[in-house]
Length: 258
Image (cartoon, rainbow, N blue to C red; front, side, top):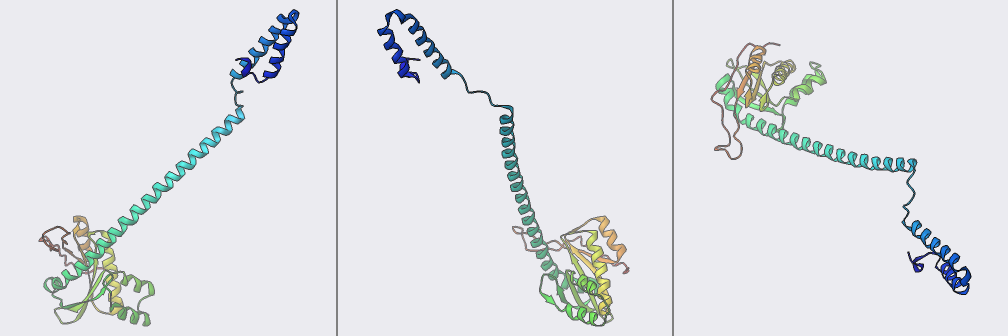
């Protein structure tokens, strides 16, 4: 460090002037001058005092807090993305099921006549099709206290209900549960709701499930519960035709059980 760089430059200039004016003390003044310059150089090169443990702890805490906030933000963003994916998947599934329900309604009208000898089948209830003739039955049953409100609502959860005449010319209903992949739950719902419909209307009501696939175990379960099964496949976009009925259609005609 030079005198020009020294923070006490004026003091050092005064020492130099004193050396010139006092030759006898020049050596002592020169030594003081060198000491002053050396101390200034050391002070400039000396690092800042180390941070205290408390200061370091605060810095680490603040750093961890920033990391935690960032992780929380990323987790929230990931969870939001997962929720949106689930919502879109559910919407796609609902659309597919609703589309299949409409397809099944078209397929079943001729099948009921051919396979189950039901004359003049008419769709009186379609959960997604806007058919509301079922309310005439359930409302009257509620007025007569034949069924409860919960039972009426359960009937209304059926996918499709057809009305027609059996071979003896008597009125009858066929309650249908549709699902692309038929499960035991569909069998239970069809059987239970058909029983409730018969209770509400006083008219024989059979249970039927319609889907694109069913396992052997579920088909056996349907047979035990007296639920008819029809497997009919809907063609998807890009396939040759818009719809088809499987040649391996499964129809079970066991006696109805509660």
